[in-house]
Image (cartoon, rainbow, N blue to C red; front, side):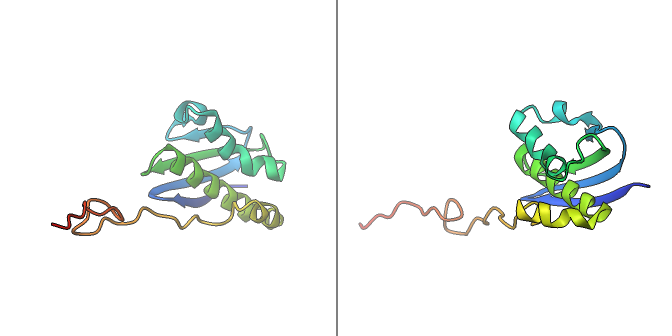
Length: 128
């Protein structure tokens, strides 16, 4: 088996995921994922596809992630890993889809409008 690559996106984060047979090592931007993501909740997000498909410790993951914040990056990696696992074994798809891991989250930051301080906030109204 050679390397399977997949793309994961969330908000403005883009993760390129390279999955290969191995020992369960996850490397994000040339660092261990536990070092790259300091928060325990994000470690769980990245491991979620493996736990659902009972493939913990079977594959090595190499990720290059860019843009967004740490939460968006972690969710982009999760989507990339899910897509790579489905490419490897299509039988994983219903399991992952049931948990919502096969869907690209379409929510993005709304653009700022002219004549307003933010996307929806208005300047204070003065009657006189």
